[in-house]
Length: 269
Image (cartoon, rainbow, N blue to C red; front, side):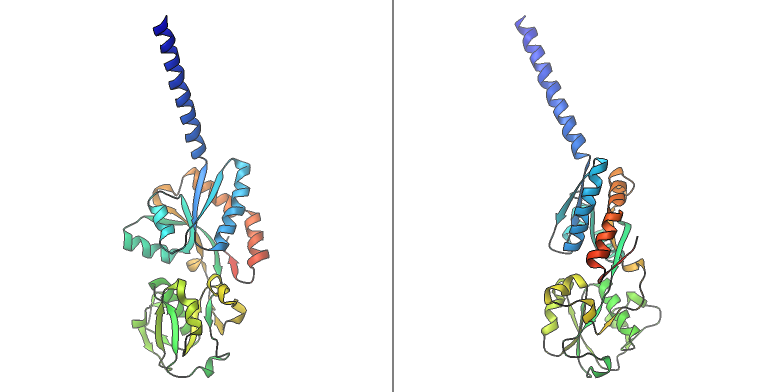
């Protein structure tokens, strides 16, 4: 009888542990972790989380402080997706890390351009001035393409937004290139002889600038540089990503973008 009693207790314990384990697994299966680096992206993820609750999903924002961690987290399976970059930047990461990340939902483009503390007119910029541009290939290419739009430089035929400094074939003002990490570009704004600084609205905010302060903005826009929801290739058709896309492109998120960031953002959905 004693053996039977012990056996029953053991069976109950196993059943309880199994049941608890199944409940935890079920709960974890409804959690969607999204890595962000910008405050605005984090805000949108949090709004999407409120929307997703109605369908039983728990979207959790994970904020990071650099431009590598959010991709590493997705690539390593620590996060289901990230919302921090455009597709060309993601492709650069894939190439460097032999990763398989995919962009699955364009969210918004930004009003991007160049800023000057000393000049309000392009014609007044003196020869030999320093121009601060990002040191990563994708943003460097975009910056140079904007300068070409303004007639300040000429790039080699066909390079477009993929150009590098080496592709500048005409530089009539003899600009000196100052290549800076994107996260530190704003600091170059006050440096001596820096006549132009390229940057994003999210980063110029800390030096009290807005796109209205730009000496000139990008003229042509499409989804090529839109910030995207990014996930792993083997995860792109999962129920989690479908739920995330539904919530993050909800009317509530779009309304937030238009009401709070309409001066800097252009929705892509």
